[in-house]
Image (cartoon, rainbow over all chains, first blue to last red; front, side, top):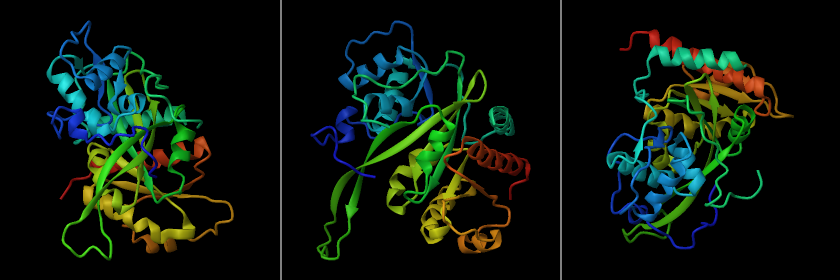
Length: 117
Length: 201
């Protein structure tokens, strides 16, 4: 389960996120984001800029950004929430809150799974 | 799966532009039970993310009251399924050992539910994951991953060994077989759906 880090320097997550240790908003591993049209990148820290650059291509979940950039998902959650705060990233539309899943969402998931099974 | 992707050349694929909503299920169970295999059977692409975790190393010699902390990297595999034009379902392989508890906060939050894969040759190792699920209040179904050479046990014996509630679905699957995995996921979501309609205490 554990292996050698690809990054030889052990960089504490809060160093990569400008001192923040928690996301400023509810950003989860499955939260979808996309870069807003033509965002300004001045003043962004390198990791935040990498996240933004990746998100210019289309809709991705936080977990996919973490996998694509080889960053810990806990760090990406914080970076993404910061980039939403600054208007660089946005949800592709109003996000469904999954902590109180509606029967409708479950029905939709069930219907979707049945349609591909 | 080949070598690890280089950071600047992600192997990720973007969601279609029509996708606006996501849902999440956890695929969990003890080490080596077939979680990644199941995700790979169902999802067209399996991605890996590495989370760093700081844990206090508790040693028998460490009686000085200054717990040493070590940073470990935990690999987590996941995949996705597009269920319709606008909805994508993410399946997260979630390590089920209690020492990975710090990771569960990010994984369990917002999960619709979990499918617990078990191996009948070693049911004792499943108690950790069932404890973690109860702690987070994540509803779950249990699926026996049929390993070749593993003896078939009567359902009642497995239920007793795992101390499952009567309402918890118990099914079986072959983690290598797409259809069988999809059926197990359907069993889980049928349960979640029915549970949703019940009045909660």
